[in-house]
Length: 338
Ligand code: SAM
Image 1 (tube, protein in one colour):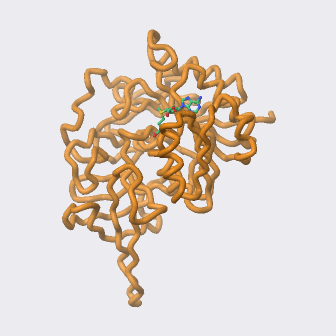
Image 2 (cartoon, rainbow, N blue to C red):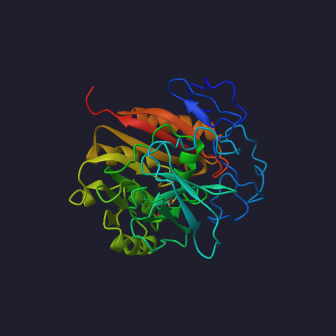
Image 3 (cartoon, rainbow, N blue to C red):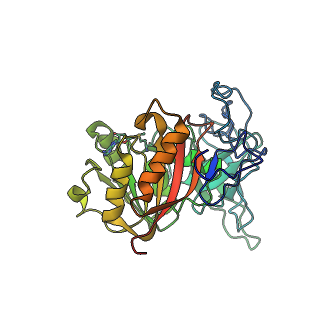
């Protein structure tokens, strides 16, 4: 479980390494099931529905994994804070199942709770449109006692099997630092699937600078950004931040999902160029991309060390089971001046 494995109790399920004392896992699970049956959200995005989904733990052992239980644990919404509750008939042709919307504890992220399952969702910046075929859920506000109008708001289902950030949120990350109004430099944007949700989260006041070097994926990314105007697509190699320095201002967060052996260097280079002092990095580490022969924990630890040498102070680590195998998310602070 990486460094500072002071977790304890939840070890069999806890995917959390601790830099300053892990919290351990919990038998309550942190929100993962494989979401088998397509419910109101369809797809495989359900995380409280039971189900066969992709089946079990695929023989991986759960020692590093996030739990698969009900969404009661850390990934669950706290609700209550002025939740925009309302009913909804969710998505395409999905009948009229009652869905309640609650804010997740991460600002800009929500949970749509149906009778059978709960789904992670983001508020659609471009109502009426899906980006990659994901389901949309329209929620109607209750309307005021004073007779004020009901308002419909549309949300998009965020599937943790297709987005490491979503998997990390359901795994119970303490803070993703990506929130309304934030500026995010996203390295490894691919065709923009997750980027589109990050764009929803930061909202119209925020900006996502999305870097992707594959021209094929870049085409989809550019198309997505035509309507999501808070996304600046940059088709460049993230190893050369100088090439896009004119496009990117100082950012609050560098998010990286490049799956490259030299990713620590790529992240550090970009942080040195664009990340504000005391900003944050949020990275996905795919162990096999860095060293397919070493145990995943060893790879995670060595990546963390590389980042520590670059003014990045990691403070949270979480593995992404059951959504991804041998992946970890690491969150750190960037301290330019000591
Ligand atoms: N984050 C994406 C999502 O959730 O939809 C998936 C990212 S995928 C794992 C990694 C992406 O990083 C690929 O699209 C790849 O082309 C891109 N990539 C890898 N190395 C890169 C580099 N040096 N510069 C820019 N993009 C890079």
